[in-house]
Image (tube, rainbow over all chains, first blue to last red; front, side, top):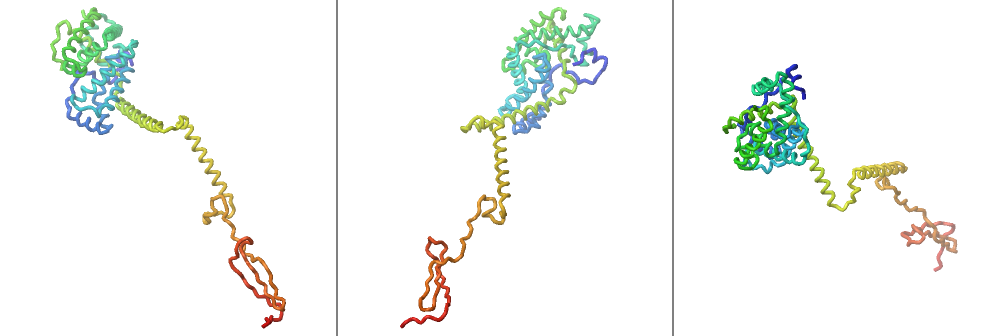
Length: 217
Length: 163
């Protein structure tokens, strides 16, 4: 992926970043219709469902693994698992929650089996819109005028800190603080109490604040 | 969506973490994503069907070597070779034609008809001047005659039987 400097020199049209809070699918009835078609073996309907949720599922897996190749494989495998299990999907929850649960569990299993992997990408791979983010500009401007260096260091520090969290704590941080999901929906996905989600989030934030204290001053 | 109030000291961390939303895959990545998912599904379903056939075949007490693709290829070649030899042999038969189903392509000739040449078994000659040759004609010397042919032969004066 090109660095931020290269992106600044040759601006390209990039998709807008994910919104501050992860959107709940507004058209759940359309989802249900597509699910019914897919349950009867219609791959085209399932393809439409994949298109609807591919970006969010990819982002979820990417933030849990900090690795593009892993995120690519795991996100695709999660959808394949969803297709295989679709006949057993009763519709007790939304398709969105259900497929999120599959992706989270599949990624957690992957992380348990490949614990030794530490390679990750940094915020050097930030998209073009990152340079316009006011939070990022504020953080960089009062730290160091050499933006590229600071941006890279910031990304590495952030990812290192996130990867130091346990898988369960990283999952709630990803779902809540990065993807913007409410506690109740995270509890549905992880099949635990909202209180458990809150306590995990509290503990994870404490750890991150300790590790990133110099950036947060 | 995120309606939970955040403590003051958590807000800088939350804003810092939110920067990760800018990490995106290469441009155009999602244009092919769903297609790749569908291809994976189709490939897995084909593999499932193939393994189903394989497990069905293993129910029979067939030597494992027979399940090898080379065994099937060898069997096919052997069948082709036998067919080619058979066709060549039937083409080489003189007089064989499809119109004669008994001889065409069967590898043998029908039995030749029994020669109908009459055979003289005995000759009787009457001593009184008139003789008759009696021919006993049979199909085979060892079999019972099927018919008798009496062919008169006039050799001279008629015979006058004594009264």
